[in-house]
Length: 79
Image 1 (cartoon, one colour):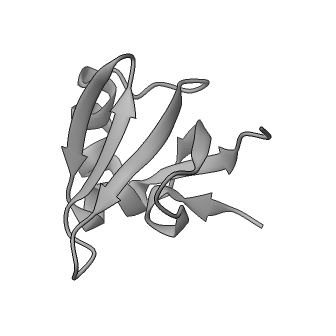
Image 2: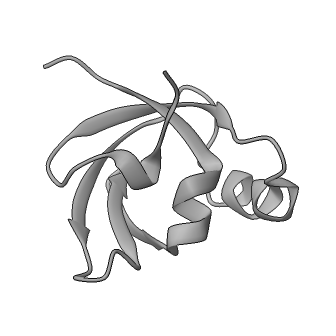
């Protein structure tokens, strides 16, 4: 079962596996931000309505819109 960043709860760590099909408009933007395959991150917080999602990746905080978060296919990292 594929999960997207939008499915990961606050405090959980995950690893980027790839991108959703049909997410071409966000793919280049996410790649430019350093969100490449194999990158690990932690969900720091989510706004009350789910938009935006803040993640900590490579020692910096990054906020993504809900649609951008749905474009990233991720897998959970075991503790």
